[in-house]
Amino acid sequence: MNELVKRSDAELLQAWLDNVRNRAAIEHVGALNRRMEDQVRIERELSGRASGLDRLRALLSDPDPEVVLSVEQALRRLEAAAVEAEVRGHSAAPPGSADGGAPNDHPMFRLARQPPPPAMDVADIAKRLIAAVPLEAAALLRQLRPAIGLWPQAARADARIDGSRLGGMPCAPPGWQWPVAATEPMLFIGQINCADLRGLPGVEALPSQGLLSCFGDHDTVMGCLLTGEGGALYYWPETDHLVPAEPPLEMLTVFPRAELLFRPMWDLPDPDSSVITAILPDRSSQTIYKSFHREMRQYGLPAEIDYPCNCSKLLGWPDLLQGESFEFTLDQPCDQYRLLLQLDSYTNGSEAAGWGPGGYLYYFLTKHDLAERRFEAAELAIQFT
Image (cartoon, rainbow, N blue to C red):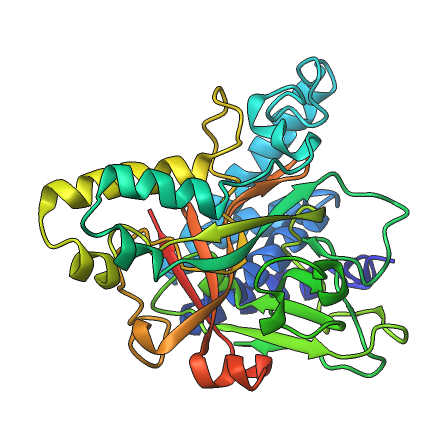
């Protein structure tokens, strides 16, 4: 039951005022969003009462300009909500679209409805590199690393609770405490069941069983660099006892659920990395390598689909959007780390999700921590376009 229903008009109005006056002290965007959500709920409750809107309008004469501005914004929100409700009552969503967003046959959804294609193999990589940059090919091939591509699929009702997936809600051991940053529960990003990776390249760096579960602070994931508080990574060796996890507060953001398949692949350093500029010091050879690297990354994907939902991977090299600049989110220089997980935007065949204004999430471990499998030491980094 909505607890606001039990409050009197005066109590609701005071709660609304307290919310407005306390907002200025909050820097964390996720926590501020929760305050705004609470404020909007109060406004809606007041608008449904006989004298509720009159009480709110009376605050237009308040001596505090912040209160007056907030009242004006609240009245505009309520008016817009009333218009939207009327429009919805007289129209339907576009054909093929459940919510008025992109239609279900949009090209960006096609990859999630297909099995993962084979990636470029080592022999082909070597052949193309030798043809493209013959003098430096051997040095480049020494940087080749195995990686495991993540291939999102539609959510399934029959999927295992401990299955590999992005989005949705996590499972965890009984009594586990959900990670919190700036009073806000961290957002659940996804989980990888290590048993699903058996036989894939590079898997020897990871346990043969158990669950890796990834979380991120709202402001980090959404690209608010100055207020972000990082992320959290958990590893549970046994999965038989895991249960649905309960956050300490209602989640304001839950990413669309997508089950995961995996794509074996081989990976080379990003063209903008210091590793490549050391091997290829002249601009012309760097341009040739950049073209090859893009071709390698897009190998096997439908040519008509130009949508960046194929760059999520375990291990390998990080794809860079802003060079090796991670000073806002990593404790040490980039060359001290190995990539554990890179996450791109994704779809599940009908819904899409992304990070911040568009970019990647990275979970890094120092070389020592990865060798020791100290997954709880992972650091969440971000880069956006």
